[in-house]
Image 1 (tube, rainbow, N blue to C red):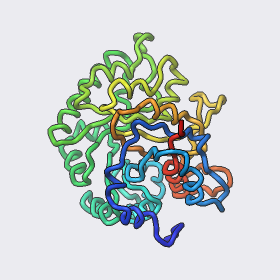
Image 2: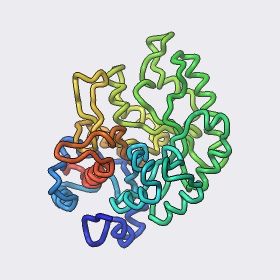
Image 3: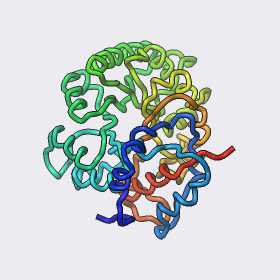
Image 4: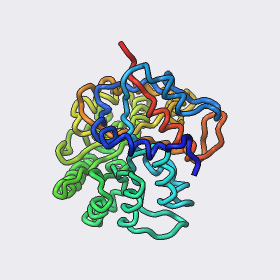
Length: 341
């Protein structure tokens, strides 16, 4: 397996000790250096070590290595063709510490059980941090879904689906009630149930154009039982399409509700109706500095990289390869430092 150094990142993190991986983890109180400004993307000859050296003097680490995760949907092509074993080995070698699942199958590689997945996580020093499942999975077989979450060792389990396709106030009120039930069941098992947004949740109710649907869901779900994972990219797309709010304000209203953030980058594109194109982290210009700076004192969060199109889009000068996107994005997130005042 290719490694950038004689001592790979996985072994370095282990040698450095769990205090770095576990104790230092907080995204709060820090602003990510803006993706575009902090970008260290360069032709393939450049290395992550050079990136770290160039930024080391700029301030404190913004996303501790032990809390940089990946949503496996980003590299679903690799999971399907290579399987969890090879994927976990590669991700650990890159430096990733946390895994958010997008299903528990590995395509053509063949069947695998949750117990076997957990063993592969442990073998590679990785932790499960969350899992995206369908609303129907929870509605039809909640206890089994929670069993799997416990086997994997994740504290969070949830969905990336909109609360409902019924975009009326009544539809979202009914969805909030359903999610409160999901949250109650998860809480009884010591787990946190969460919902991951796209842009549509920030649209207005079809029967009341003055009511933002996300507000209905936010205000009518129990904050002690229903948690939220803000996908920063999609929140900014929502702001572009349905203006009148700032994404960070939702997190500031109740920081406890947002234990997970998707660190997905976007490049402004006026020709895109959403306002941005999805790009690998560091190649875009979403205002991560301002966003995370506003969350001072809000507690620990998990920063999870996701790029929906990583298997088909690469930064200029690089071949199309979702592993390549994952590694460069890890390096970009890992090298971020707070600007000194």
